[in-house]
Amino acid sequence: MREKLRRYLSGLRWSQLFALVATITTFTIVLIFPLYSLFSKAFVDKGGEFVGLGNYITYFQSPALSISVMNTIDISLWSTLFSVVFGFIYAYALTRTRIKAKAFFRYTALIPIFIPTIVHALGLVYLFGKQGIFTRAGLFPFELYGRLGIIISEVIFTFPQAFLMFFVALEFADGRLYEAADAMGIPGWKKLTHVTLPDIKFTVINVFFVCFTLAFTDFGAPKVIGGSFNVLATDIYKQVAGQFNFNMGAVVGTLLLIPALASFTVDRLVNSKNASTINAKATTLIVKPNWKRDSFFFIFCSLITGFFLTLVTALFIGGLSENYPYNLSFTWKNFLFSRSSGGMDAYVNSLEMAGLTALCGTIFVFIYAYLMEKISGFENLRRFGKLLSILPLALPGMVIGISFIFFFNNPSNPLNFIYGTMIILVVSNILHYFSVPYLTASGCLKKLDKEFESVSDSMNIPRWKTFLRVSAPLSLPAILEIFMYFFVNAMVTVSAVVFLYSAKIKIASIAITHMEEAGNFGQAAAMSLLILMMNVLIRLLYEVGIKAIKKHTSAKERHET
Image (cartoon, rainbow, N blue to C red; front, side, top):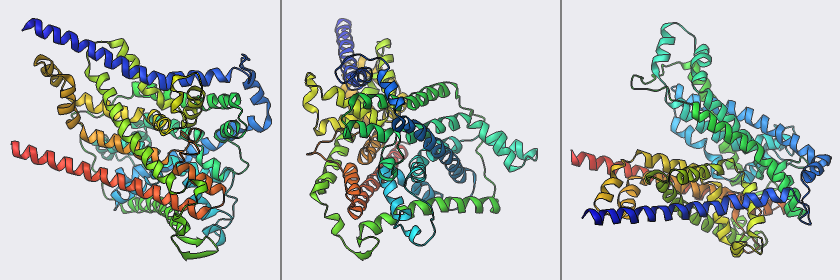
């Protein structure tokens, strides 16, 4: 019996090693090899001769190109400043006041997540463009196209990220600190500056770098509303898609990595120092009534929410109007998309891409996290695998897209056959959004008792059965969250796939760009509404699924007791 168990455990270790090597090798092929192709292109000329920093010198010596760096830094800093301030105030209102309709405010703050950044800019055009609703009413006497429009659009894009991070940080607080402050007669503004802000200082740093990186690397808003105001994201698109200057595109791609790598480094350092201050002796923070405070924050949240709802309303007006703004008669014709922009096929392709990304991504992420967390031994290999899993956090979508071009479009690459197919779009999306689902799955699996695997090994039960019958069912809420995350982001992505889609496989977010370029604003608004409604539906199904799981779990616990 002992000999049989020894042979089983020996075979188990070999199978575990094989699974680890297979998943890490797959990750290395789609992550490290394309990045190597990107960096190698940046240091050679069009003929393939090594030129060192020659391409970078050429780039910065070109006034039209080098000014894009300063423009990008400028709009990123201003966008980040507004997003951090607005996100903190909004999160503070939902966690530290007694305003009404908190659930409503929380969900409406997430509206920008459900639509591409191109649509944020499109909504602004409907509201504040030359023929915009507010412009025609004389309520917006400014030029939208250019710097101002990009900053507003980037604030819309980054606000939900800032709000969510602040909300999580502020939701849990040790009530004893505030009770002591009240006993000492410390006023509210001093509690904010001496208790609240110091407690979340690491979150503030993280939020700043996350918002800055998102604004720095965004392509959608500058593409639609940037006008002649050049930024790095539009530069890389012009160099690659417009002039086929792949070497200069690689240069810009490496420049886009700088803030992302800085953000990644700061995040790692901050998280290593950020120890929780909540312990077993902590008490729940009880927010006391204050009608002046609550009135101010209610008005603030109402203004933010009202702006987002107005943005969506503008899309409905544009999508359901005969010819906005000249003929506002109701019509469905804008949903009969022209074939030149991809037609309804683009929307179907997006659904297929998002569905495959969510399905394949969820399976791969959960298996990858299981191998990293539940296998004993192979420490160095698992440590390398965990490092790979976090690296996508530092990769902007456009960098992934252009690096995939250099690697997979090489005729000598055995994987060249996936270029221009749905497969490469799905792979790029999984890689782009991998890290957050991985952290979700890893955190969930760490909470599961390790005895499950020990017992299954001692009873000669294959690990795959334990995985399917125990680990996966217990992790179902996390699995649903990962699926939703992949699906929603794949539906709205632009930067990760803008270089990779083919004429035969257009997707909805790219089709919106083509519609806007052709002046078909009604059709662009209609396609935006379809994306929004699908993502909202997926979110609702997720909420229903989570409630059903919680209800089933509580009923089971009551039955057992």
